[in-house]
Length: 333
Length: 245
Image (cartoon, one colour):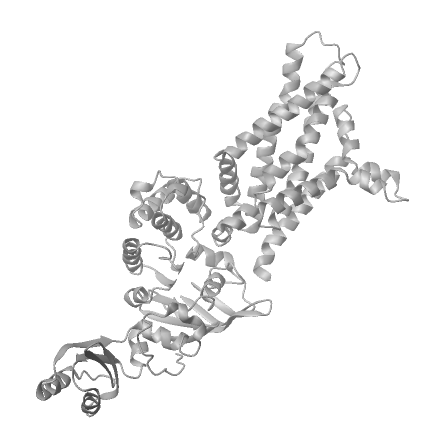
């Protein structure tokens, strides 16, 4: 449904997008991740025909975004990052206007508007002036606009940006529902959200795609899929030696918090050593009050790919107390 | 061109959803008719054609009206980001430019029309006023030249608005360009050796004076008609350039 080949975009001397290639199949929901300034919005703007690429090609819904831009625009629903709306209009007036621009007329327009209002939970706000709406409702109006002509492809740039947790949950549910009928490419900073919604993830860094796979495959790339934390009063040296000796544990780190030692064990892929650790602690009669398994998530993958080799992107650090895991090699599919 | 009407309607209705439109209309009507009234009182007893006085008052304030109308056309869309939504909808650049242009011109003409009507009110209220007879032909010709010049100046304003996203910059640049267009004849006359025919041909004041005396000729149609088409063509190309650069 979407095919980008070697997309490149220069703004003067700045390279915003540098030879980006990827595909999104029909019916997929693909998450586009990357730190600020990585090139997500620029890539989406190129796909939405708002910006021309300096080099490369992009095919959306079977049409070239440069040569058949009008045909592409007929087949996409695009929600820009800033959700630009005419604040003086009412919701229904705005959707009628947008529907007309997208070729809908008469009964079809009214029907599609009702559907879009219903799907986006805007039925009660249809008479409201857009300028008086909350951020969440404005986001919904933007989504309803993107949906009104029932496009094949939805390109959503940060659809949950600036929303409160309840609104994020609502929009997330909505996108999941839309994914049943549309091909969706969405960008987000909320990694858990992408992990929950998307079938596949593209990670872009400094204008290049550095990872493109399902979240499960990306997670499996991490060395040491799991980490076990033990809070114990065992002697530090003895505990470290005993834990290191257990099968599947690749590394042990200990720090002290008051009377307790916090022991972090990194484990080999597929290994869950909690039972062995419990038995060890019991056999040695070392007082233990917690044994916790931490699963690696998309955030870890994202951090390893985007932050580990570039300290400038520290703004997306998920947990500063965490020790960085070993980095994975650049991964392309 | 299916979307021309849609854009025209939205732009025109958006003007009237904002208080600026009503303020602009009232202020323009006030200052124009005020100027007209003062000019009429100063010319009492003279044989100055009343249509000439009226249209002189309107043309004096027209650059400000055009500036206020055009400054937000594209600048506001760029500032608020709505241009992104508009340009990623299945709409051609020609439809966008013509829709916005038609809406701006409609608003200008709707604002100017009541000012022209002042002449009929004055005629009815002051039957014994000693001035030259009101010539309906001169008024009709004056309306034609007013519409022509408004069309041309609106095209100038639209193109200027397209080149910036700051409304203040847009307003200042638009006012300067509109004034330059109106003073083109005088500016060219400053250049030594310019043929008088050329100066007369591009002189807005010359054409306005002739038309408001009821003397109609094709020159302003050709000059401002072709100028309008050319400016709108440039506006379409400027908007399209975003897809090439």
